[in-house]
Length: 143
Image (cartoon, rainbow, N blue to C red):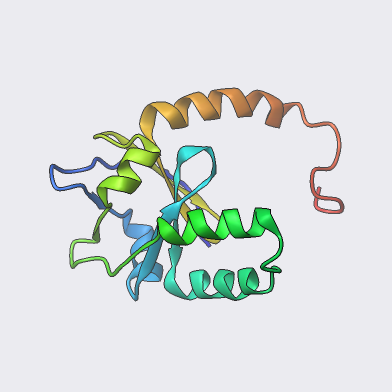
């Protein structure tokens, strides 16, 4: 499980140092791909394999499943972090997420998300208010 918020910076080669607490779980390999709200998703390779198996179950005749799979897999990049815990984020993925220098890396349960710092701050400011005011169960039986 990935938890917390971290603020690394991209270096001039498009590399990002993964937070120390995430490195062990990602050390065997990871997949970076496009996520919703213009962030990047980072999955441990094993988790990405499980997602792939689930997506295989979607009927090829379902247009939304085809569209989602195409975007997700076409933009995916697999990598093994180097000894310093760095990963290179390809230019196409940096462009998609608007990553330039200052980033925010968050733990999102089974995945890590990489955000442009300004985009994350705007997203969080917008969502925290509604989060604090939730008056019904978002996930029945959870709270």
